[in-house]
Image 1 (spheres, chains in turn blue, brown):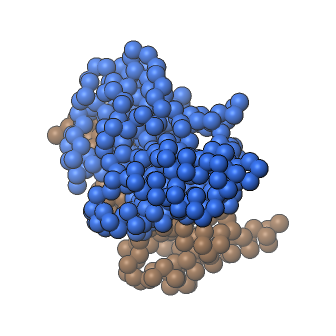
Image 2: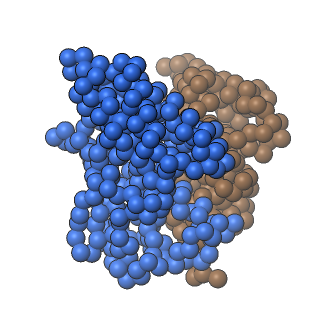
Image 3: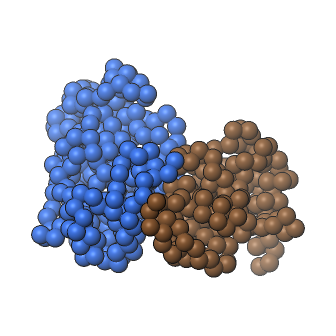
Length: 284
Length: 164
């Protein structure tokens, strides 16, 4: 499997990368870790005339935790996020999710920016970003804008990023309380049959806030405000968990594929969401 | 045909310069241009790990890297880890513990295990299994591969202790 020919660009800085995008429009695509795009190019399902490799752009790398906010450069790899003690202290759910992505070799190359920007409903970070109410920074030749992860995804592979823009970083308020990322997959390296991110807080024995988001159960990640609301104000008892699961499952729209028919996925989703909420409660 | 570009690689300590199309896959640059046939093109879809090499200190599936991306990289293949006359501890351990049957996955397994032990010199069995989960073996059932890696770790750590 050999990709169609392309012209290769490796700009040294963001300005250079934006320049290539401005020059070639939708004939150009940026390359992060390449473990989604390159397979698609090899299958000739993606055709790219100008490939803009971001690997040399230092300003797109690194994890910063300051003033209660976590900022991660788009070219930071899953491996780097798992290895970061700063990140594990500030947002342990990140590493918990990242180790469940693909396999070790892919995690050395795969980046958080590629994972969120590609718009693949199978990717784990978009749902997690919605759970954390993260913000994505998009830079284009006209300037910089922020888009909330909860507003970013329109349908499979369609996001609110414009052709000339590069997603440069993600950021979110360092979460507190209990968390869990639960993922059901057929084997290591597979995408989720169902996955769920939960982050919640408790005070005085009652849930004070809860965010529930799901992966690969619709053509976009699904954030269920209703599921969170079903938990808030309760003690997190079995009835509340059941109500939250019911609300979350009502928000998904899975389609049948080689991971099973839609009914099976609804069933698995209910179990995974329930496990994620229960584990997050136990850590709160 | 696409335009060729100059690509510089340091492979197993040796500097190479070659002309390649950007779209050529690193696995074929290594195998067909540099005659390093240790890394194998197994599935060519980034699943099996037979093409695993080390690139800039990372375990990488070289079937999913374009030649152009590797320009400037420092690479180690199985050929750089040991030789028939001078097996590395991991290679010796795979031999002693029957860590291979057909041998097709072995270069990728050992190259991956090498990096794993660099990062985690004293892994548990579970950590070894998780650490090599990007490498498929269709013969051994993994038992002896895991045994080989654990034994290699013990040998390396024993030698370190003895030296202290």
